[in-house]
Length: 110
Image (cartoon, rainbow, N blue to C red; front, top):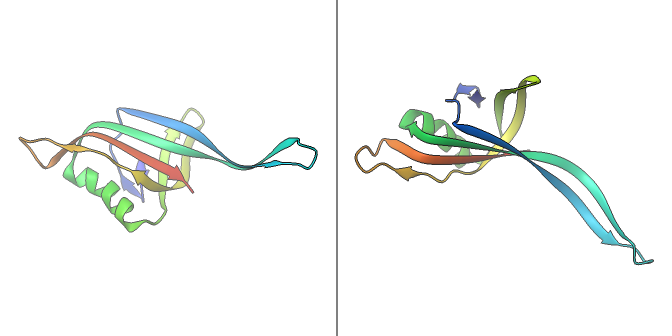
């Protein structure tokens, strides 16, 4: 797996959540219509723990606010999509503050 062409560790679990972008309108007849504009994916990566150098790859992408390439492999083969890092809650281990634990990173396709 790669983020912004940098290797990232494989997550404990990766969920792909499709999100529909649509516009719903009511016609003069009272009929409701929906125009689907696009279907995008949210990628949720769950880690039990990340070292500071691995976490820094996500942190840099998050604070830049720019879209970055995300490369992963599924049953159909390797895929590259462009994403932004939306959320990345984590906690620090008291005994070792260089280790981030219970990290959940949400990437949104652009």
